[in-house]
Length: 341
Ligand SMILES: O=C(O)CCC(=O)C(=O)O
Ligand SMILES: [Fe+2]
Image (cartoon, rainbow, N blue to C red):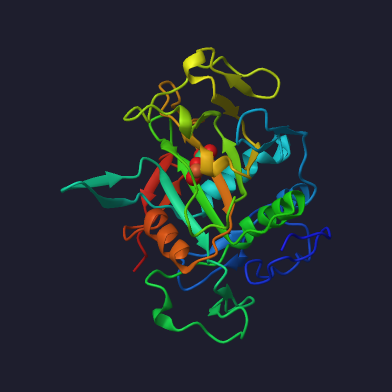
């Protein structure tokens, strides 16, 4: 159900409460850290300076983009205030655990090994289950409140840490949508990418609304209509002009007139909704020259899954069965995290 009242808790199971800070915190604090048996390590709460600014989001203006067939976007330039976007990026990169997922797919008779070309992590559970309130956060049936049997999921769903709850809540209030999943991508540099795909899985609500945030380095976000994709040419990129004003560039080539390019900047939010996922593909292509200490980009998407399979799928492809990675500030890269002792 959409939340109609500002600051109302719309999905209690997902937004487990975080205790209000007594005095202003400017540094991440492990004292109020969010922990759960499924987490490799606890995730601190956000400094108050970031929370205060987040609570007043969206900061910038928004523009509806629906001038193409089957497209319905709401593009928020600077949803997150410019003056906290970098701090939020640094905080999330520093304190979240990420994975580099490997999996096998069958194409025809042969099996292929795929290595996801970016770091990923995921939190949430589909709407057939819920997390009980903090501090225990165990899985319950949302109707009866009874614990969910241990064998209901092969994966182990993880509650959203408080540092992402604020953004989720603000996004729900702004979009009047509700979300129960948060996927986070970390693109270390221009060699990391996501290929053309649509998030039109059967386990999402029909015509899903997906709110997608960018933090850190600017990257191109390409879109193309599925009807314009020639067979076996599904990774062709539009030759697009650079951004002007609203950040939207359009291909001049009439054979792919429904290709779009957005140069997403730190703090931007793109809400994709309506038939967008059914009819359009999107990607973050690899980019030469995006390298060095400021090359990292975080993408956060909020979504709503309504079937159990959604939970299994998201954990399989965004957590997998490998080691967690954690940002190493001295080395300036993600390193495999090992439990001490
Ligand atoms: O990084 C982005 O902006 C897009 C990510 C995306 O499309 C996805 O995670 O499904
Ligand atoms: Fe996507």
